[in-house]
Length: 249
Image (tube, rainbow, N blue to C red; front, side, top):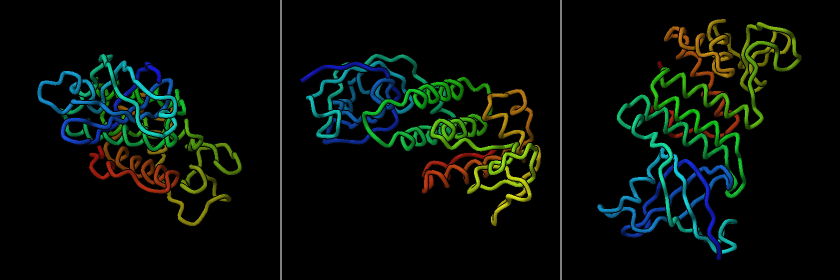
């Protein structure tokens, strides 16, 4: 039996019994962790208010030796709020739906419990902080997060040079299956021809060029979001449930 402590983001919660919840978190040191929080659904529980989705918390767990590898669940015994990102997210529909998609994406990119994924963790913290601050359109923040999550997972798309032969860009065509922008010789069936502004926008979101991204027209944001969604679904092999509710620019 042991205690361990970590900081993490609450991804989702599930009811357990009459007063408990199963909390799923993405933590810095232990990757994705599911744990039981006792009594958090009682109205007087201050502990429960800290364990809502979008919350960045410092949390202590109690676990038996085998519980971190799936044989049972550890218990949440203490928690302190680091940043209540939910306050700046849940009261706005566009931010809330974008944030929910970010949480689902982070969970999908950390399939194996207990395996650290520090890059994805830091990416999620940064994305939620930006979303809660309201400095950029929620759809842009979400697409930037999705593109960078894909890059962290080894699926970085190309928006300039040909993803197949490396021919210097800009290239006209975009193929989800080929890995992004492709030249005429590498064009595959099903390739699309997005506007040059869309490819510039997506490249800016991937690299963090917010001046370019914020100046994009709404029609280019919508078109770009469609490409990002298609690219994400291709690599995850099934869609995100939450994306259908997201406002697209």
